[in-house]
Image (cartoon, rainbow, N blue to C red; front, side, top):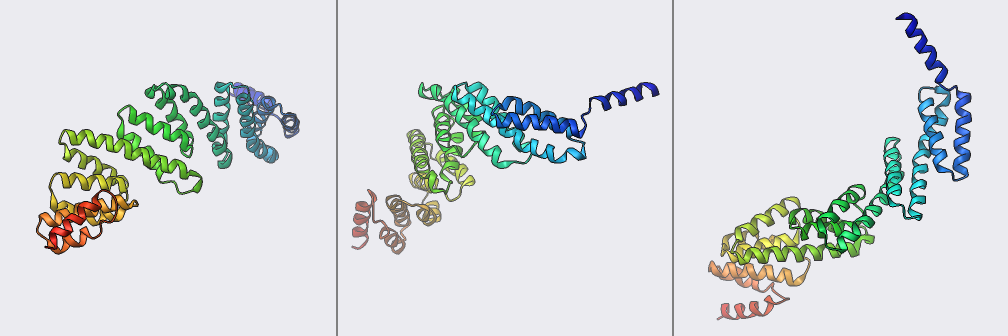
Length: 312
């Protein structure tokens, strides 16, 4: 056993490269990178990393190899994109992102993941346009995981979920888009809010038709637990309580629901419901005060009529 152990050690010593040999491989890798032969550069930089990991004399070369290797795969991904070889591009961009994360280059990781997401966006586009939402969602999910800031694809993912009947999952993605603050996302934020309202109103209309006001309230509560400041679900919940004629809850929640609204017509509707609840409870001064806050939208005329009656 002792002789075998010595033989193995001797073998390892033979295959392990010296710092001088590593320098030669490193120079070949650098030359290949400079010549834009990124496949060769990647293979040689990987050898430098593997063989030089425990060699203190090679530390500088290994560090440079680690920073350059993810860029090699990134460039390979770009080359594949130019020829529309999306499978090869996806493989290389994914490898770039994984290596960049492994070696602590978060900027490079984000760049590579951005392209991973774009490829999934392209690949899911045909299914989405054909209204095969289940297939589209399965593809878009991968892209969204790689780059949640690709809001164009995120909108398609959220719509796919909603069209499949997975309302809660769709709302989660729409809420994430709507929460973005940078001006570059402004159009997609507006679109997310528009689509949230559309799908929510459709769902609420179906539940209202069935008289399921408790279901509407439960749905709104679930969304408000995630985002207590949601104007949409504050609005939905208050209307459901008003339709239930639960005037105590309307009075309890009305001011907060009104304060959450950014649209004057929606704010006025909240105050109108609050005024009607106070009126039903024969709390005349409070009802008048609430109706006076109704200044816009379809509720404005009804509020004027209610104020006229209360003033008699």
